[in-house]
Image 1 (cartoon, rainbow, N blue to C red):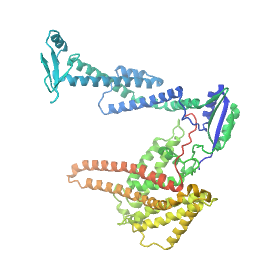
Image 2 (cartoon, one colour):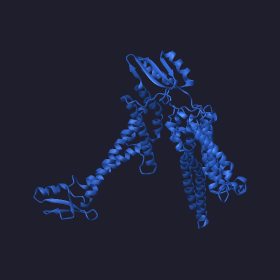
Image 3 (cartoon, rainbow, N blue to C red):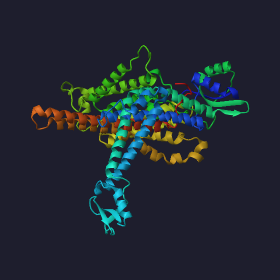
Image 4 (cartoon, rainbow, N blue to C red):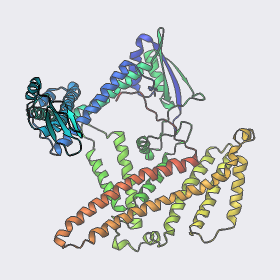
Length: 587
């Protein structure tokens, strides 16, 4: 369900404003809109957090560079000493300073390389000698040939010929410039080596993130705290079940508070609280960055159920599901609570639970369809589900997809109708459910799955159409929303398109299986002696199945999410226009 919210206005003495914010942060159940913060303290806190994140990226990049063997780690250079001597609080500044020195050295080196490329065709001559000749009345000019590969020439007592471009004399000998380049490259390499050496302290920076984020949030809260004379106040949203907690805190701190319902035009945050078994889906919503609007329905239960089914069918291979399940089990083991940490973080536990469900569903689909890394288990090829899904015309597989789609959309319409059962508009939703069912039969008939079309379906369609036409709008709404009835034919055709779109479950899953089979055939069909065949065979299988595995993950993000957030949500009336409840609390 979506938890009801109360609007909170909290008043306190202006001199106690900061203390009130600290107390409000302690109870951690009030959502405060911090988006309007723009003070210098807020900007400074954000910059400090951004610097820490940048320092982490710098160290990680240096570690990768060192791992590639392009730089050798030397613990004796001065930059390494700077980083090793830096305390936890000053490590970020030290990292940024060393990286700034590295950038300066690389920029200097690139500038010197450009000079060397320009004057290298002339050799290591002494520009002071050329200047002395000029002083003696012998004008010396140097030029490069613009029409051929870089080559230079000096001209004495004459004009530069056509096709040559005169350039100024260098400020020093070429050998001196190359010596400076060597110093700059050495300095840049030393900085990179020092950063790579300090890569082991990345966790020190990461450990500061919660505190830095708290600083940003608190600075923002101070910024939005309004003050008039001797009174300060702040507004926010409180879940209805947390109101007693806020009232008790107000009594102990001497605050004045006003609780009220949301007014028209206000948009409270959305706090989803599904049944306990389905609560991990909140992590999926957070990861996708979506939330239903406050006045919409909580679709967590059908979202998770159908998403798991879509996940299994889109991956389409029980072997891939087994890999995900094995990695998930490893994740459960690696994050096992210890004596110091009694519980896994909620987000970690939620994602591990989701991956366990998704991968298990994929393994079950592998048994039902007998697909394992593009091959099948010999003992399972005659199982009823395998032979039914392996129909040569693919009609059974398409029937399954269209049935899943129709059930998904009919659920949305029936649910909407039940939720407004006290309003006659609910009859229009039941009518839409009937239209979806009719279009399901039409779709199956078009592709040849159903050979006959029962006559009673025309009566069913007529009744459904009458319900939609007669009860979508009330009499008072005909003038302002009558155009919706004019769009009815297009909306009915849209239902047909929505059902057909579920065939992507079959198409993408089949494509994944076929790609895996082709890589298997390519590897096995190599015409090589057995003693050397296994090397390219393993490489082809690893690369092929790795690519297919990655494409399966992409298809989940594109298709499984779309079917839930677009087709189903359009029929249920979910706009995903809300924003998640994020309490002001200390992390």
